[in-house]
Image 1 (cartoon, rainbow, N blue to C red):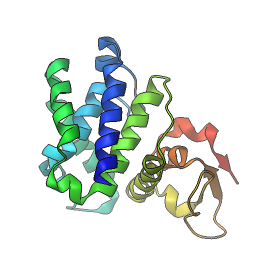
Image 2 (image 1 turned 180 degrees about the horizontal axis):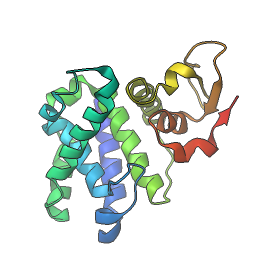
Image 3 (image 1 turned 45 degrees about the horizontal axis):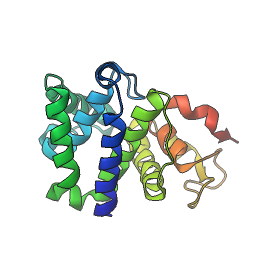
Image 4 (image 1 turned 180 degrees about the vertical axis):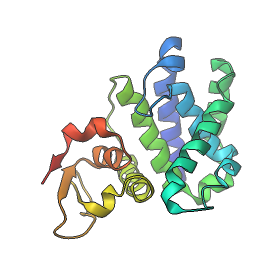
Length: 199
């Protein structure tokens, strides 16, 4: 699975390398207020700035979403003054050399990475064929984030139409779609809702 993590990191770099400077620094993503540069700062930060999450486990679960957002924002902020050239050099090193923490937490890290890759692509109106493992990781990430953020995974039965088993309580309202779209919706990306079937 570490090989897939490296591969997805390199796929993100290919996407970012193809962007104009304007899109890289100011383009829209599905992460409100974040450019592709900010998204890259966050995913790199998961390897190097994990201390920014120390407050996430403290306090009420009801405020965890706000604390996660603050930690994510701190990671993005760290790279805003860095040149694109320097940041992309760092990204290539990051892609080839996952930290020990990322290797241990690879199922979670892969889901966050693949989801944010889709945030960049979809925000700019771009598409790709999402690799199978990445699609499953996006769904898992959405299920996990939903518990903290919006409880959608607790109120619905999630039915992947492109592989995988349904998740959630039988008899709950169904939401059907691709693993990628379901994961994004569960994580609060409401722009994908038209791709889903609600029953």
